[in-house]
Image (cartoon, rainbow, N blue to C red; front, side, top):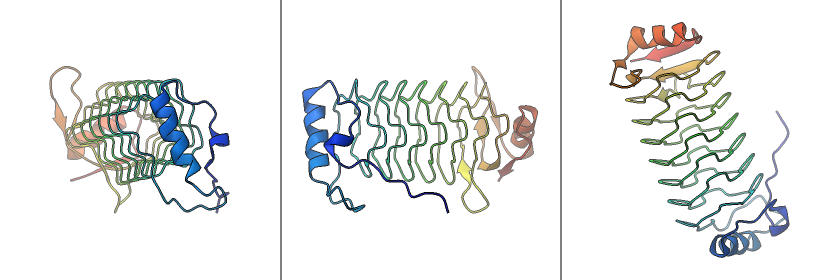
Length: 223
């Protein structure tokens, strides 16, 4: 068993506060309500639609955070706990969520172009309809994540780990043209769209061959 991760739970743990006063106050109120010596969470960050530009929230405990429609452009959330967080419709362009815990997070229709999710855990997360073009998802662990209709064109999926027999990653109608998948492993379900401009859906053996031809022969496609 690896070391237990302890997340920041006090205002003193904030690396850099948001520029916007409303977002700064919401974060301050949330952290001041948490007991610093307990792993329990008794409240959630309520920040729907707020602007976190300029913030560095790396390593913070933010499980269940309500960030629907929030502006997180360029924000660092490296190693943060975003378990079951709500990021639907949020703007995450250029944000850094490397090594973040995003299990059961919801990021439907979020704009995460160019965002980094290196090594993040996104099992059972829902990114349906999300814009993840040019995002870096290398070494991310997808588990039973869902990317129904998401746009992953030109994303970096090198050495990522898709699902297993019982935790298959869903790529139904997911756009994966020009993705870098070298070294990816695990199990997926299609059909996925490999067309760069026009739709070209592949499933089963054809999709598995696409992965193999792009450097990921260990990816298995389940129908």
